[in-house]
Amino acid sequence: MSTSPSFNCKQLSSTGLKPNLKADFNGIHDETNKENMHAIDKVEMVDANAAEEEEEPLLRDNPSRFVIFPIKYEEIWLFYKKSVASFWTVEEVDLSKDLTHWASLNDGERHFISHVLAFFAASDGIVNENLVVRFAREVQIPEARFFYGFQIMMENIHSEMYSLLIDTYIRDEQERLKLFNAIEYIPSIEKKAKWALNWIANPDAPFSQRLVAFAAVEGIFFSGSFAAIFWIKKRGLMPGLTFSNELISRDEGLHTEFACLLHSHLKKPADPAIIYAIIDEAVSIEQSFLVDSLPVDLIGMNSTLMKQYICFVADRLLLSLGLSKLYNVENPFDFMDLISMSGKSNFFEKKVGEYQKSGVMQKPSDRRFSLDSEF
Image (cartoon, rainbow, N blue to C red; front, top):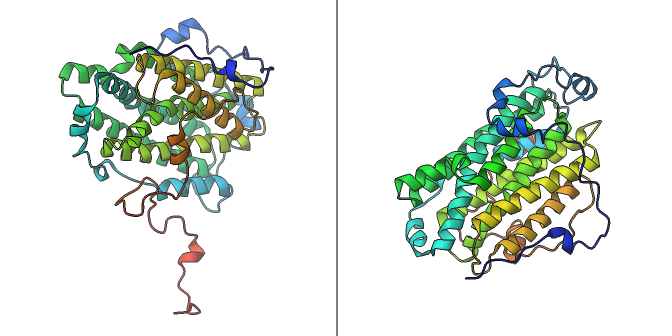
């Protein structure tokens, strides 16, 4: 098989002008910081961004943060209710048919999916590290804290799901341990993990920048891997893996949208030049991961197409953050366009990734008993 040719999203851009991508990251590129995977434990966060906390209503000390009613931020509260409506557990995913399909994949396909699952297994724990150590402590409005609390639980479910998938598919114990500890053994995954951990550990980066960085983690670092599994679904393979992917990608999409929503509520959002720099760096790291995960071309899937898809997703995230596109490329995967069409699930499927818990999204007024109702 031939290897994929090199690809640079910017070569395909229809715009000749690019934002300054050399913005100051407030020390995020410090080499000593990059070498310290455990720097989070040593960060003093209390007074690091005192001025920002005083200026931002979301971060300012709030004596009413312990009580949720009356709701002050309706849109933020709605995101929490959407999360609750979409709750699911690992036990709802049937993996009984997956092993037969796994055995039918070729070595390149198994290598690709194994790398994807290895990154996912660790990534949700890193997202939770950020929520527990930083965001849930910094944000003072209860509506957002409710969302973060529920997100932490869902990230735990995602982590359990990915660990179970690896445990089910990978029979060799040494290979399984390597995938469970991919941050230590697979350089391209280590690079992604370090980038996210460095943002958590940086005491000088303001909340606005870190919010964008973790929107990139969940919106860019996850997107190529989600597409890989949807590519498997397109071929009618591994229903357990692909169903769990539908559920998790929906959850992570909501988390990314929530980060963009919070950013829009900031009185002083991140500087556009810094946002572009954060996104561009995340794209570069994700593309390196995909080249490593896809060393050979597969049918309908190769690193060139994947790298273009990452640029497409990054542009979509930039639009959600209120900025213009950076790469201006088309979506190379028609199956991802089909996936994004809501409400089109097969009526005869027993379960679909769009289901919601009954009644959760209703308003209290919708649930009241009325003698005026027509029967």
